[in-house]
Image (cartoon, rainbow, N blue to C red; front, side, top):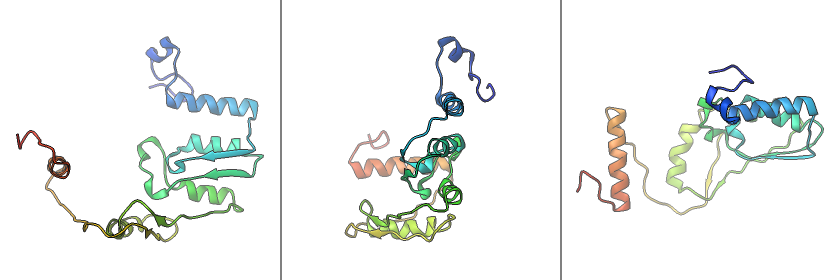
Length: 172
């Protein structure tokens, strides 16, 4: 792999194409040279941004007061790409006059799902979690423990088949 700002593979260079990381680095270079800034900036899935993306958001919003970010730090799942739900705390630290609106009404999940999720996510840093269900009661959540990852995968595949009414290879 090549260092920052350099094409990662000979083949990409030969084709004259950029991968996603290269695009971010190019955007960062262009922002530094052109000082491009926006009066309004909306960032969706903010929890999925990495450090370079965070720097771009801050730079692009330097002269504006209209930064609008949407996301949920508890749904940050791209740590392997450098993202972190901590970007929300970082934004609060960098912008002390920021106005935050937390949406706590959940329209997707049943009360049982939320009652199971809250004890897991409340260990994450940040504000206490409050999720209010807007769905009617559903099936009870259950905990399934298996002896190994492969056993878990087999159980999940069978469960999906059972729920969807499909016939899997084992049943066939």
